[in-house]
Image 1 (cartoon, rainbow, N blue to C red):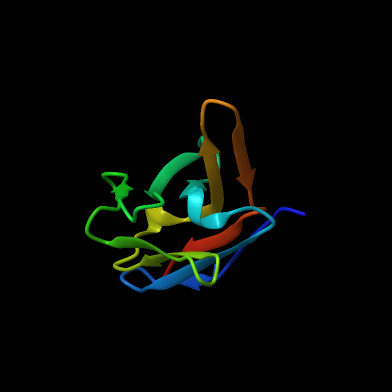
Image 2: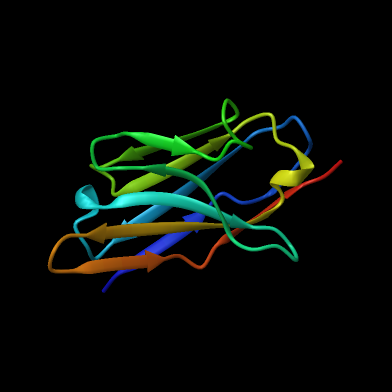
Length: 119
């Protein structure tokens, strides 16, 4: 049974930090690209950061230098360290696991964790 479970969302003040975790099970985690998306109220879901199986990373311009994505393949977990938070970082953060090859495509989502940045 595939499971993707986010945690760590909370209320934080501007300038503060949060660390999100995403625990995965039921699929070969090490082979998957793991991504964090977020959706702010009234806006479309957007890609925040991604990390591939080799550890290569990419970030949205809006979070570069503030957020860091990492993965622990031994724990089947991906993290998002968020520093210097801004009110614009408010939203529901979703974890996504993606894999594709010439035969198959797998795309799994978690239920999301709420981040609110407010003073």
